[in-house]
Image (spheres, rainbow, N blue to C red):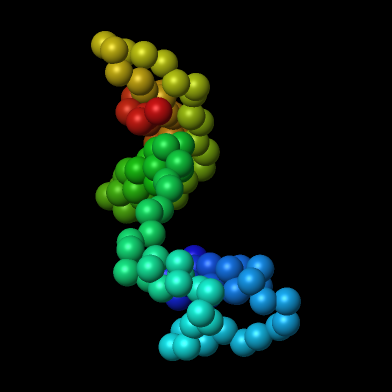
Length: 112
């Protein structure tokens, strides 16, 4: 959701509670009851990124680099549950690619 849609959502919700009649919300002309939306317009909207999604994005980037470097395709991938190694959390990853008989293996750090 971008900032424009967020402002529309906040403005429409606040004005809909204050006014019983339907209206059309314009970004240039807010209703009087939508002062909260105009206050929030200048603030950055924090994005929540799930730690597991962050782990998958970093793992995906690493797998893409491997596939591009070896000029091959992915056959299968297996990710083990988290385990501790020297006080840090890791997931053991097995990656099968067409150009190798055995899987590539490594411990991928996980942030959660």
